[in-house]
Length: 154
Image 1 (cartoon, rainbow, N blue to C red):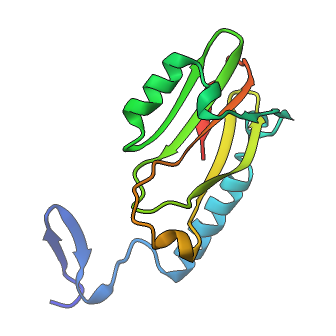
Image 2: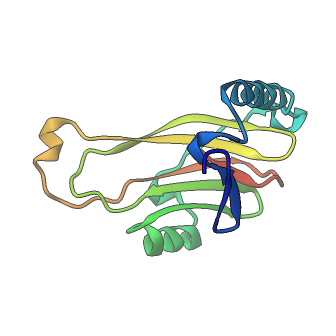
């Protein structure tokens, strides 16, 4: 039986591990080829064209319609954009949190050839804030210039 081919669910293989599609050398070659392709796949459209100036908007300063939309979505994590014709509002919510003291850091906001990219991080509460068992709904609204590119959240 050694050296005989078997068929299992339509896949043919030899017994005792003979006849593998890729040996160690084949895997190294495939990995090297993949890395070369990956390195060559950077596009100009992925490059940062320029930084976008963004202003963090308080709840009181939000347009009324946007405030209502956020109020309806804040219990779950959300990402949305809104335009009032003059500005683009980029909104990121992290849903219900069991305690207070959370904040959101705006890490990056920039424009590429094809999109606006925004990167935020939810920062946890201090130890003292964790003891307060009041649910909160942290979200961040950034107002920036009106641009036509889609927004990508990271």
